[in-house]
Image (cartoon, rainbow, N blue to C red; front, side, top):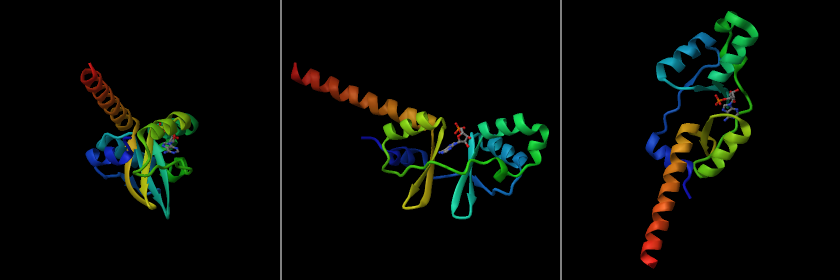
Length: 143
Ligand code: AMP
């Protein structure tokens, strides 16, 4: 069973996080510069997340004033997390049910990575390809 640990082994453990006190304008620059869809925010011992989706919602509600708002004003506070032992299948389920595309990974409470829906789908396809290869080898061996 493939787990999130396998993804992190290939992808690395870097997590881009910013201060919740930064403005939305700063967050947009970070998202664009790093070519990512979401940033984490360290809010004391808790983590928040701001994704492109939150910025779109804020613009729809507040217009151009959004740019000067603080990241903490638009972040999602109730963040669902996984551990390195979480299966890829479970991570996909969380993303589908929760309608989000990012999951921070905590190992004994310590932030060790962030997986996106792209990482999870890629890992799932590789897992399925390897299952098909094993089955093919089995069928050929049995013939
Ligand atoms: P996303 O699809 O990741 O761009 O996020 C869609 C919405 O879900 C946004 O409001 C995000 O702040 C929120 N979100 C993203 N990741 C998570 C997560 N792991 N747990 C809870 N909410 C999240």
